[in-house]
Amino acid sequence: MKSKFIIIILLSIISVKLSAQKKVHFGPKIGVNYSIAKIDSELIESKFELGTSLGFFTEFRLSKKIRLQPELVLMYQRYQHSADMYNFVSSLEPFGNDAQIVITSTDQNKKTKSDGIYLQMPIILKYYINENFNLQIGPEIGYILSTGSEGVSTVDMHQSLAYWGNIGVGYQANSGFFIDLRYAHGLNNISKDKVLQSDIHYIDENGNETIINNDQTVPTIAKHLRSFQLSVGWAF
Image (cartoon, rainbow, N blue to C red):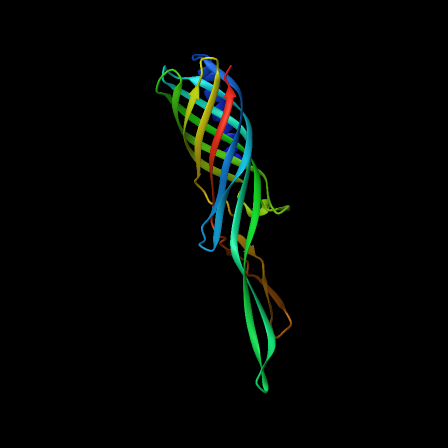
């Protein structure tokens, strides 16, 4: 939470200073994303899913070719994971005059869909190749508002903040209409380590009880967010 307030304050200072000196554009943007929550496990396959986004931006013209564009975006992302699950069944079958236990297994591919809503704040530096086309790069921070899997909330299993690095290209018409295509690469593991809570109770020969805390932190499988984002908007 403290990191969010620091970033908001810095953006406000930049906005006040630059708006007094440079030409400023602002406007809405809407888009779709093709996202994946990549899990670092060979047993689990991660797949991309489509999501949507809605946001607002302010663009500061720093020079003829360079512009700075902070954004505030509400992003809805969806993901899919699949893994092979094995079910073992034992049965008693006749074997001559005796009987034998036969164990059979069935392989079932289980698919799980998850989603999340993030309040994201990209800060994009744009370099204009010519009057309309531009290259984009910049960091992004996101706060997880909600996340779940198969209708069950998983907010407590994730970090509250996520970080990305963005690269992309854009086209802006003279009328103000623009279209952007970006790739956002997750920089941090959003999975939260689990804490197994346990106490050791020790009673001495006099009947005095001593309780020793034995909580253990168990690392979870790392998960990183990645997405391709296509958005359109209008700069006023």
